[in-house]
Structure formats: structure tokens, C-alpha cells
Length: 604
Image 1 (cartoon, rainbow, N blue to C red):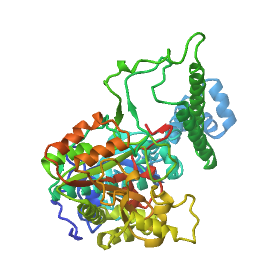
Image 2: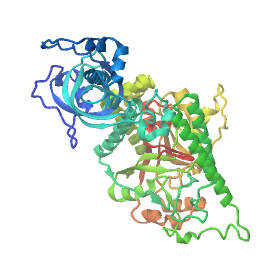
Image 3: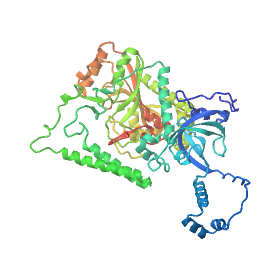
Image 4: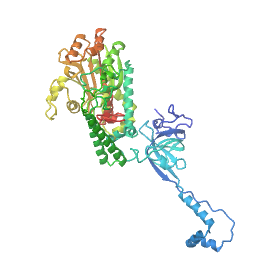
């Protein structure tokens, strides 16, 4: 535990490696708020969050020096006392000495009044900001005060000169770097913007305290998940992002191609996608106008909408067949493509990961997964970041136990390592964040079968569901939300799903109707983990592939794993973005991703 006593003058301050500066986290992580480092000379770098200027009292005028007296002529008296005569003397060339004196007086009056700028500086290492005092002789206030200004300054840490929430400040005596801001164009210059509008400037939104806290918690959860697997002797491996493997539960996939049709549009991109983008942009413009955002942002959004509308018109015109030709003649032969067969962005790495588990034992991977599903849901994304694992010589129960242990570990980790950020979001976003995380570290999960879940939901009378509850169909979001949020009010694991709603490779149960799969659901978030035990029996796996009409040739490599040294194994996929949503208390998953992608719109 850090001492609250002031540190000796020779106490070293830890520098940020490779940059020769001190992070604010190093200063504020002490129990004394950094006062122990008072008197130390350090270099601080960051971005201005807010500022104020205080004028200095003008210096007293120096006492007049004794000068030799001499006779003063009547002309000089009149010239200095009577404005009219003074003007006449100027016209006729007189009063040279007075003109010089008048110019000097005017120049002195134009000099800016000395002042001190008090800057609240943040460097992204913690929630707190440091007050940096910059004298106007060192840097002009108009340069250092605008929100977003980047400054690297050297000075002495001292007790604050003005009362505030901090006990220490930096009295700068050198400005080593200054990145100025155009206040009229910088989106964060004005009032605080809501999270949905910040999505329009993802390259800047991390400079806000809320989004910065979310990103630090995301980092902690990522690190915690890696630590859990490494501590439990899982081997980290990589799986391909581009694959020919098709999962029947994901009907829409992103095609990877280098072939461009003659009309100039990418193969597979429809006008519907661009029109959806137009609707999204129109909503953004309405929101900007409602919130009275700066005029530049509105004008830019309107221009962007106009260009997109023009693009639709051009594509619609090009899409019409030319006279004497057909659409078939206008298409490009896919044999010219980079790959010899159709390839897609992967929706899951489980199959490839299984091949590694069949040789290395327990393995896991981490990376983006893609699903071309147009959804307005606040709980799902087109590009999802996932941790996936396969456990050799294990069954479904083992995978469920591993998922539960992992969830408890990461929640405890973020409570310990990111306490400041969690507490900040608890005050700013959701007061129940800490309580929810603490419950996960010690509480138990409810486990029910799919059949039990259907029966429970059928008995609900106080709520009218939009979709009917029938055995054999996937549970909708409203069904799972009601189970988790209203009935059990805790995380729930639903296992043994109908074979029709799960992938072909999931192990068939003895009833021949259900498969060994599970979903782990969290309150307010929905599905966090999807897991299963893989089918190790070659004949049943082959039958499932034929039953679903999949290409057996495409999965020969996967069938080989059953022909040569088959092993029972299970695993799961954990959606990191959903985990961050749970840990931060936010309501829209697009706010916990650095650069979210949605139908018709990409962040950057």
C-alpha cells in the first residue's frame, strides 16, 4: 500500500517507458493524491479537458527618476495641454517629441495583460486530470486553453494554488510540445455530446472521460481473459479470418473477393445496403439539429447525405441493362478471382480450433468474427470480438464449468484492477455496476434445459410475447431477457437445445432430438457465451452434414479428425463486447467498441 507521507525529495518518480514522461496514473495512484511527489520536477503530456484564465494584477508603475529641470516654453505647455493646438502643431510639423511619446504610449496599451492559464489535463491513463499552471509569458492562453489542445510540459509538482478537487498541480516552466486546436471544427469543443452522437467521431470520442473509462475496462477484461486461460495451461493459437467453412446458423456471410463488376460496384453489395445508410444518415442529421450541435457538423452531415444519395442514383442507372445486352453478359466470371473457391470472413473459429486441440490439448484463440446480419439490436454487432476455446478430453459439463469459472475470474479482476473506472461509471451510467460484478464473483448461475425454459415461458401470463413460444425454435431475445431479468434475476445457462437450432458439429444427445449445447445469458445483456460438445462419432457427423445439405467435400478435413485419432472435446465462444457491456452498465453495444460497424455505416 502506498504511503500517505510526503516522499523525500530524492524519491524517484516512475517514468513512462520510451517517452520519458510521467503518466497521471503514477501521480494519483498514491493514497495522498500525489502530494508525496511535491517538489519533484517531471514532464507531463496530455490533452486539455477544461481551462480557465486568471489575470495578473498589473505591476506597479516605477517611481519617476530625478531628472534635470529646464525651462518649459509656452508652446510646449500649449502643445501638451490643449488638444486643438496639439492637432494644429501636428499639421504644421511641430510636436515631434510628443508624437514619439504618443506612439510609445499606444504600443504599451496594446500589450496583452499578463495572465495565468489553469489547464485540466488528461493523458488517458486514469479518470483523474491534473491541473497544469501555464504563465502567459510561457505560452499564450489562446493557444493552450481550447479543449482538446495537446501539451507536453515540464515543471515542478506543488500544492494547488487554487482550491479544487485535487491537492497537487504542475507549475510549468517549459512547454516542450503544443498541438493546437481549431475550436470551430473540433467536435468536442462545445457542450458534452451524448454517446450516440459521439459515434460519428470515433477517432475523437475516446478523449471523453466516459469512453476512456470504457476502453480501459475493455483492456482489463481482455487481459483478464488471457490470464485465466494462461493460468489454466491453455495454449494461445491463431485461426484464419478468411475461410471457406460455412456455418448453417449464419445464413448471411461476407464474401471475400478481388473481382469488381463492370458497373464499378463491389460484388455482393446491394443498393439496399446503401439506402439503409441514407436512412441512418438522415436520423443523425435530425439528432444533430435537435441537440443544437455546431453548424459545421450539420453542414458536413448534409453534404455526406447528398453524396450518398447521388451515388444511389448513379448505381440505379448503371444497374439497368444496356440496349442489346443482358445482365448475364455484364457480369464478371468469378474464375478470375484471387481464390479458386468462394471465401468468406469467418463467423466462428471453433472448427479450426478443434484441429489444434486434437494435437495440443487445451487451446484458445482471440479475434474478430463477422456476420452479415442487418439488425437494429443494441446487443449485437456485425464485427464481434470473441475468445474461443476447445478443451480436449472433455464433455458439455466441463465446458459449462470452465465458462462459469472464467466469468467469475474476469469480474473479480476488473473490480480489483479497474476500481476507479468502475466507480466512475457507476456514478455516471449505472449505479448497479459494482453490485452486479460482485454478485458474479460469488453467486451461482441458474442452469435449466431448453425444454424447461420453454415450459416456464409458456406459463407466463402477465406478459404478452410478440413471438409464440414453441419447442424446436430458437428462443428470441424477449424470451431470454424475461427469463434472466424477470424470473431468475441472475445469469442463466440454458443447455440441451434442439438439434435444428445448433450447428451440425454439435454432439447429438441420446434422445436424437437435442444436442449438447449451451448458452450463458446475463441480465440486461443477453447471450454472453455459446458453447457445445463436439460430435466425435464419424457416422453421426457424416449423417448430420448430409441431413443439412452441406457439401461433404468441403468438410473432409474436419471428418479426417474423426477418422484419425478422434477425441471427445468441448468448448465455447465468449463475446468480449457483450462482457464489456455488462461490466460498464451501458445500454448500446456500439458504445463499448472503439470503431463499431453497423449496416450501411462504417466508423472509419
